[in-house]
Image 1 (spheres, rainbow, N blue to C red):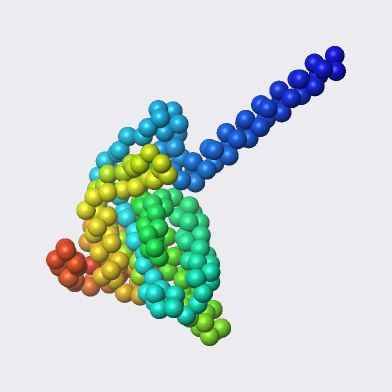
Image 2: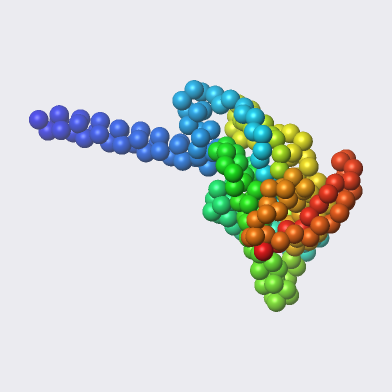
Length: 235
């Protein structure tokens, strides 16, 4: 009788351990992939690439990052970057924006993937405002303490993309298309502390009283020629 009970307890413990391991694996997968894509991957063993007609893509970059890296230790630099990107992650979650990836000190995110919606442009711009404010607050603290700081440029563009998973190891959800390149150009053609948007993003937001705009006219963008750009601010 005692042996049977011990065996039953052991089986129950094993089941519990298996369930815990499954939950941990699911949690890790959701940290890497959007929930919708993760579910498809678990169910089918693969995830189809999807074309989206309209997605809003955001890029950020830090001005002064290289100079700052020469003045503080690598550990301190990574700590500052981690603090910023962790805040950006939380802000993206707040507005339903999908973090795509980080590339060095650049951060890339998109609204309208993998779940499509009609608010993606506004969601991304609102997130961008909070990115900017977070960095500005950090800059003020650094200046007060006499420490080196970095500043942020943010660029946003709306257009079609293809989204999906690449690779068989270290899965990564990513997006591709000229929209991504143009969003990057919006960032590099912007100014510190400003949110620079393209004409297509402006077209979606121009009637929204939540925002105000500064028409910059046609600005030369590397590899794209002259493009109409706007600085967007809270209305």
